[in-house]
Image (cartoon, rainbow, N blue to C red; front, top):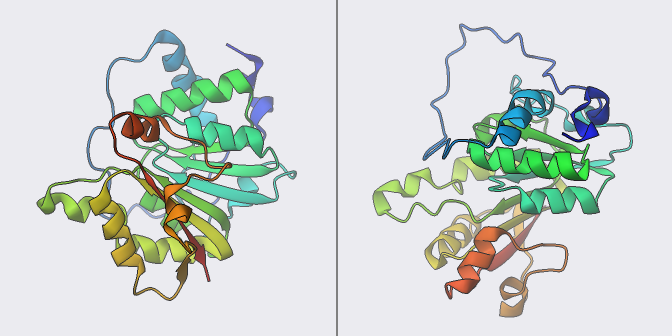
Length: 251
């Protein structure tokens, strides 16, 4: 293991300041769908999950009470959030390129979380915190106007019509994202599923709190230089499904 397993390598442990929430409060229905664990983890990944993950894990707070900058060192000036980071390659790249920005990654699939922990350990990335469960809990807990950029890259499309209600892009979740994003903050969305792209644009069209930045087809067909390809995006290209890259700005 690298030296990053030392607690001092990651600053303060991100324990929620409101973790003593009453247990009598009604529990919201769990939002995580699909698998949360795949094959058995390698010994190294298991050690990282046992020793490093607890120091990076974010515990949900009472609504609107989590100030994300407090999770990071004083050098962090902004906080970016990625929902559904998959194997963590995009999140790790962004964290390495932007050491003065704090990153929150949400991913319920343990094997994907373990892959991100390997990136963190190998590259010594102190500016990442993890929610390894329901991302909606974090959106609800975050203080209003506290996130500077939000990524949703290649979310599960849930292609069957009866499962469309499971898609992360929904009116309720967009309301939560609008709450936590600062004015002028970007929401970046990517998908190689045309129906999900159309679904997203349909949900965005009536909203007055987000502006789609595209001025021509080139704007959503081309991936910006500061938007590295994910393994899902690369797989889609190999299989002949060019992804769409949508950027919305919070008004």
